[in-house]
Image 1 (tube, rainbow, N blue to C red):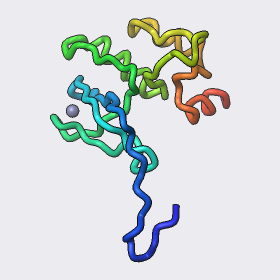
Image 2: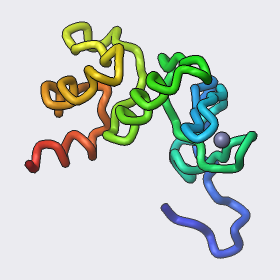
Image 3: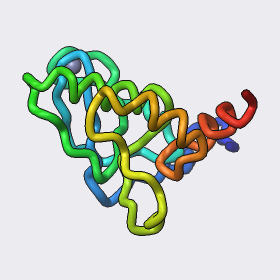
Length: 128
Ligand SMILES: [Zn+2]
């Protein structure tokens, strides 16, 4: 990206019109926030509660209860492997994300190229 030397005409990053779920795995809480695309990316927001980095989850993400530690571990395991929570409307044939933590490893094995997975993570999975 070109940044003028005087800094007065920096192209504004695209900000989504939608509020999208961001989660803090340490606090097991989520917030709906606008997303900065083309800006600082997914690491750009910090948790209002603990100040740690928030993770962009996706529009279809439904936060588990704070006390449901297993569900939070499940979504964290998926997130760390590059899976995000978007609508399945354009991918009717895709296997739904696993319902429980126990199902995660089998799901990951079956779905290295899952459409809900970020492209770099999919590419990395293909290299094995
Ligand atoms: Zn937090």
